Length: 331
Ligand code: SF4
Image (cartoon, rainbow, N blue to C red; front, side, top):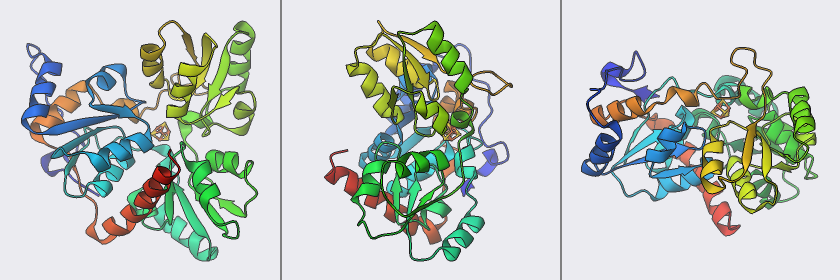
């Protein structure tokens, strides 16, 4: 999928940056010289979010990629997001600072096994979460994000039988709200799967005034103790309009940077994880991206994202369908 010339083996350009340089000013200078834009996901570190042209969740970033009039799109996020940008802007050079930035959820849906699953269950409309590879998108009828998943499902004719992939938690969350014949692929994101129900309950007892807000990729028991469930963008919007002053946040804690910027007077407590390796709920893939790698990527214009021509158009089609429906629904 990726053709990165000399940087391919490492997956990123690992060159030291001259410490006398003001790296953020240099990024700004190169960005304007090269007519480049930087798109950053909410799960990136705060310093990356602060140098980006657009910060958002998957739906907002897909739109930004589609509408970008820059020649270069540098994607501070994970591989499937950079691939989505390339699918929506095939004529542009799309760069990702580290091709090791995968996604456990996208990886939980292998394209050979998924093909077999579709063949075993023919005649169903395939709705696929954007957190998936281009190969999986090319087998899908329509893509969704956590922002629009429920509305996308609702927009399809009632008689259509459905397949939802790859996230079982988001799929189950939607299935509980709609009365649809829907088969759900058994995939998950390791970050959202590992939020600790006991840890959240303990935090809530210690902070009874805090609202629990979680992402729909979390497991059902965690969702059941939540005061609000929503996509990353929806959690941010909720915090802005809600009256609470304290939140236990059940998603990747990168979003807390934007919450702090929007409502600095409020308190945000990251929900604890059962992951014993770090005890935190950071996405190790998202956190592979650094300001130094962004500098080198912009400087050398590598690694660049290339998608196999044979699936390019087919994989872009269900994403465009999602954007059209989202526009109609005002999402
Ligand atoms: S937080 Fe989960 S879904 Fe998001 S990029 Fe990381 S592994 Fe993938």
